[in-house]
Length: 329
Image 1 (tube, one colour):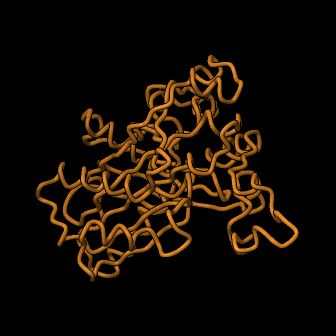
Image 2 (image 1 turned 120 degrees about the vertical axis):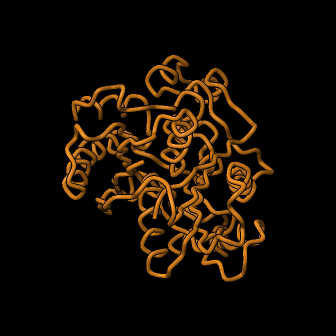
């Protein structure tokens, strides 16, 4: 299966780093220079995942008049922040897009590594079932789970959705995946309450509040995530190159998960990568979680930078998990 096109949706509501710095009592220069974000988009209170995912899919249709909704036999949504505990978001999106009832729809509960995993999942599923066209949607609205004054998370993240058309016919050819998981680091990026261990149904008891409301917010240990990234990602890149019979010099672009400007710079230095080969689009969107890699790929497609290029994609984060692959455009 091949990556044929990628469409993007970004919320209209934008928050500048001037405004956000006041919210979290942080130096604006640190946010813009170290994290690398000038502004980001957040969903408004009345907006949700389905709204944004719909726009991304509609953009994909507008970009590709040859793509008919009747062709689509697979719809996958990558998110850890669905609109509802159940049903799965892909079922709601299938209805909203008026896709045929024989469309296979399921969600992938992964964050920053989710897009890279999802491409391989879709590739295998489509090959096994003889499916010619599928869509992978990413949307992880972290604005819905961040504390309004949390300086560990709020300056980093932004909301976005993407829709990737996977086709048997033409596009960037997927290589072999390298992947891994370290569940021992799960507490470094976590929302503690809301699942079956700390269910919403037990939030209030006769005696009052059972769980702190903060447990329903995102908690992140930035230092631990940095150390994890610096240890795991270079090894994963090396392993992926070996699996795909490539050398590091064969790669035209290294499209890493857009964690922060500082992290990308340090990762590039650790691996001795030319800065021109490590693109970054954090300035106007921030860290968009599972959407960060396809969002950057879409922008590079539109700039006609990917024709006949070898692109390495690598996602890493919540889990803790990582995944790296090659796309030959």
